[in-house]
Image 1 (cartoon, rainbow, N blue to C red):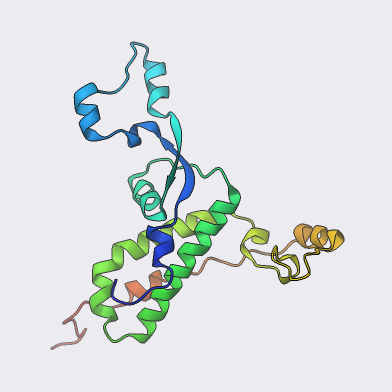
Image 2: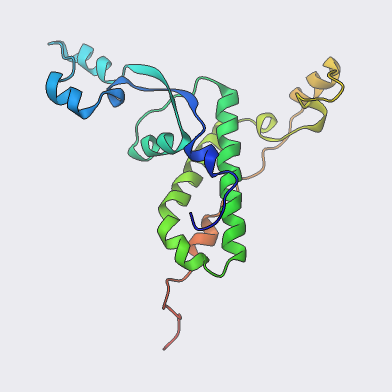
Length: 187
C-alpha cells in the first residue's frame, strides 16, 4: 500500500457471511490424502461440485473467487450493500491518491489489477442493488437521534421512484496514465 488507508481494513480484515462451493474449503493436503466424494451417478456428482457451504470470508477472498469465476452467494442484502460501500470507500481513497500524488504513476502499475478487479466487483454489486439501498436518505437513518421514524415518511421514501445514478469508477484515471519513460513524443 503506497499510502495510509483508513478503509483498507474493510477489504482485508472485515468478514462477511457468504455461501461458496464446499470444495473450496478443503485443503489440498486433505484432497491428496482422501480425495473428494464421488458417486457413480454423473448428475449427483455435478450436484456435489456445486454444493454450497456457509462461511465468513473477507472482500479480498471474495474478489479472488469472483476473478476465477467461482459462484459466491451473499445471503444478506445488508451485507451486500455494506460490501459495496466499503469497496467504494477504498476506491475513493485511491481516486484521491491518483489525482493528488506525484508518485501515482509508479504505484498504479503495482496495484492496477487490484483496483480494476475491485471496481468490477463493486459495479457488479451496484447493478444488483436498488437506488433506495444505495442512496443514503437523511430521513430514514437507522441511528435517528430521537429514535423515532415516521412510518408514513418511511413508506413514501421507500416507494419513491428515484433514478439510480450511473456507476462512476476510477478506471479512466488508470487507463489514461502513460507508462514511466513514455513521453508520447518523438524523444
